[in-house]
Length: 305
Ligand code: FDA
Image (tube, rainbow, N blue to C red; front, top):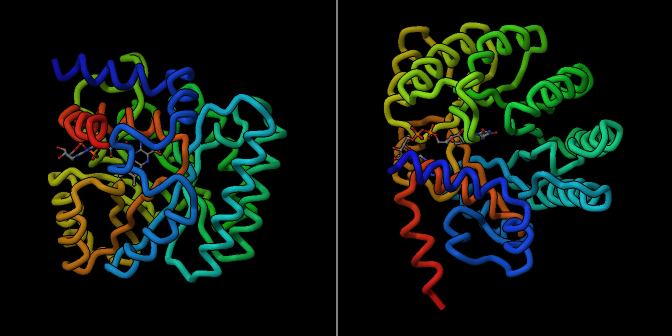
């Protein structure tokens, strides 16, 4: 039953008509549980509060699968606007983005122009930019862009997903780029030909990749809410004598807040991924797929005035 619900929400997350309708009808159905607001004005207030509580942030202007040039350029403009405000308000925040929001599905020239504009602003205002990883059909293009730009921009990071069989090799190939990496389990619906179908295997591969990345000397962000993985990282810290300057934990806004607080109290660097914007539908559906119990929050949102 749980697997069925998972598949259902992942199916919805890709639906362009529902995404369009959600944008049109606004910020509803429990969206505020996982999303910090419709615009950067709201998001920046949240970031300030989160910073004051001892966390660092990466902010994400929600957007994906954009299929027209105008919107892709506007999305890049919004990222640059966010970078300037992060600087002006002295917020402790990086920026995360998805290349499909900048025109990855439209043309290579367009996506390169947009990401370069953002990275130039990031360089000027000292804001690190992480390229989120989307589904595996876009993985090669995303990694190629990362590799091309990483030589020019040291304020650039990306993400690798433990559910894919190929990730161990991708990690090894990235080694020469001295990458700034976020490792996650993976949030998209992928076929068995490319991804471990069993959660147990994903978790084992995740541990293997974390160790490999840390042994390679990469700055490694561990993006998870999983107690067992966090315990594993803490054990590695002891066994490998790791410096806390080499890794950080990352979690999504609104998820496992007590655990986030606990890690900060223990002196770990804890970065909260804070999404904002009106394109919240796909993001929220993936959060429901990860934990169908979250549906209750959505239902409460539907019936709340
Ligand atoms: P797992 O799913 O096993 O969950 C462990 C425990 O955490 C659960 O038992 C539950 O208690 C809690 N939990 C997890 N998800 C929850 C939810 N939605 N609501 C409430 N509780 C929840 N993916 C991707 O493909 N590309 C990307 O770029 C990113 N980027 C990214 C950034 C950051 C900062 C994080 C934390 C995650 C991502 N992800 C991602 C998502 C990631 O791939 C994965 O889907 C989620 O983090 C859930 O996996 P966990 O590691 O938390 O483990």
